[in-house]
Image 1 (cartoon, one colour):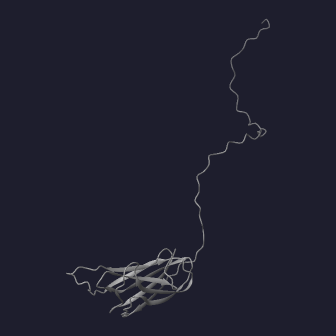
Image 2: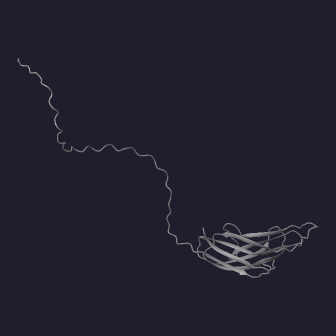
Image 3: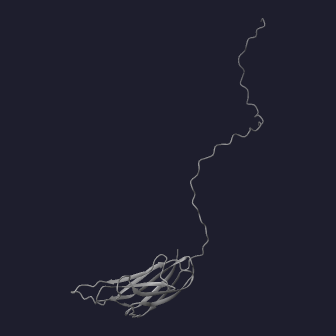
Amino acid sequence: YNGMCLQGPSGVPGRDGNPGTNGIPGTPGIPGRDGLKGEKGECMRESIEEAWTPNFKQCSWSALNYGIDLGKIAECTFTKMRSNSALRVLFSGSLRLKCKNACCQRWYFTFNGAECAGPLPIEAIIYLDQGSPELNSTINIHRTSSVEGLCEGISAGLVDIAIWVGTCSDYPRGDASTGWNSVSRIIIEELPK
């Protein structure tokens, strides 16, 4: 053999060894970049409000038969419970206007003596033209009509609500009649805004 070794065949593969012990934890990494800006959220106003209780009143008359052309026709007092509510008012009754020449009358509501300003007055008008010679311009028709609207900005407490008759601006007045031979009513309802 002269100092040389011959290599023999490979041996049988060995068995798996035991798992190693846990190594030392690594150092923290570099902070990441800021993310994209999110969408704007909705403002949620959570308020606990008491349940709305209906508040309404009706004043009625069997036959007003009120023939005035200017002035207060009827009044109804109402107790308003909240300042941040609106009042819905309705007058229903027969209205009539007659004249021989062109004329106009206006029926409107007042609240504690003043017309509604939130947002505008509550009114209805009847206008009659002069007519023609072949038509009878003194025709006397009484029609059930209504004056209705919402008024805001009225404080809580007692409110005197009245229906009035007056003139239209720039027109002569005629012969008005309200509540002839029929039931007339004022209905008042407090509504949430």
